[in-house]
Image (cartoon, rainbow, N blue to C red; front, side):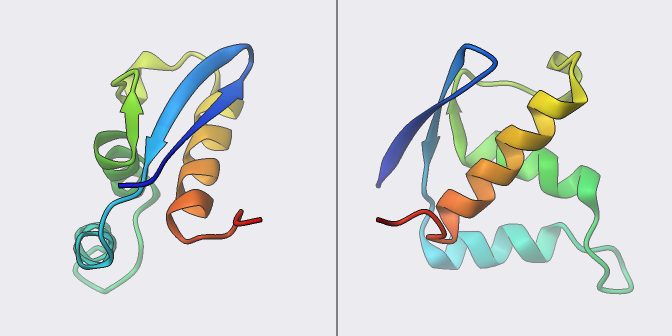
Length: 84
């Protein structure tokens, strides 16, 4: 699978794309019973499946901005938004 290393606040993170079928399953798991996306579930799933190094959980972050930027970068990478 395709990987990418990014740096946020002088920390390196390795992202890895998942197969499209797995991405669809992740997105489905992140919705509540009404079909509305849950940010908490999305962040947990992205950290578990796309951020491969270092392995982290939401609770490991003290800085909201760092967590938010990491997850946004990971989702963008997964969806091909940063292809050159």
